[in-house]
Image 1 (cartoon, rainbow, N blue to C red):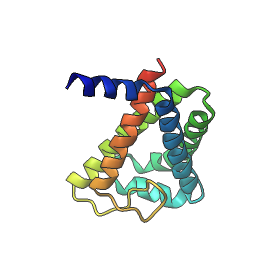
Image 2 (image 1 turned 180 degrees about the vertical axis):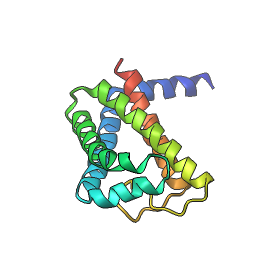
Image 3 (image 1 turned 45 degrees about the vertical axis):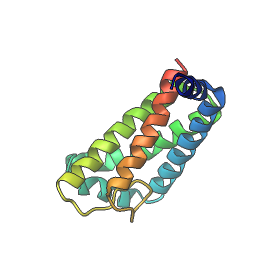
Image 4 (image 1 turned 135 degrees about the horizontal axis):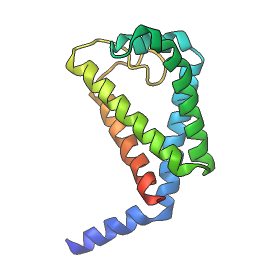
Amino acid sequence: MRLVNEDLARIFKHPYLSYLFRFIVGAIFIFAGVQKIFSPADFSLSIQNYLILPVSMTNLVAIFLPCLEIYCGIFLLAGIFTRASAILVSFLNVIFIIALFSALVRGLDISCGCFGSGTPVDWSRIIEDFILLAMSLHLVFRLS
């Protein structure tokens, strides 16, 4: 058992794992941000459908959030401001998980808005966000 723990520790400390996680998380956030930026009205409607934010804030969030996602993704891919970007991405993933879970618990039949319109809110979205959260937290603590 000790040998397995040492092997896992060696894998998680390997520098190439951080490069892989930076690439995966960065690419996903760029892709998601670009999808939203080309249809801000649809994304604003997706945000409104969660019934969490006041309607007056949804347009601001629909414009700001995709830009933040794209910038964080670019910084992760480029390897600049990596820790700060990983912290922001971790925070965003926590917010996304809370919003998705809230929609599921309340029985809302809505599109998640994750990659533009058409992606339904379901448990697979929450699992995906937890995986992204784990990768981004790895970057936060590995790079500190």
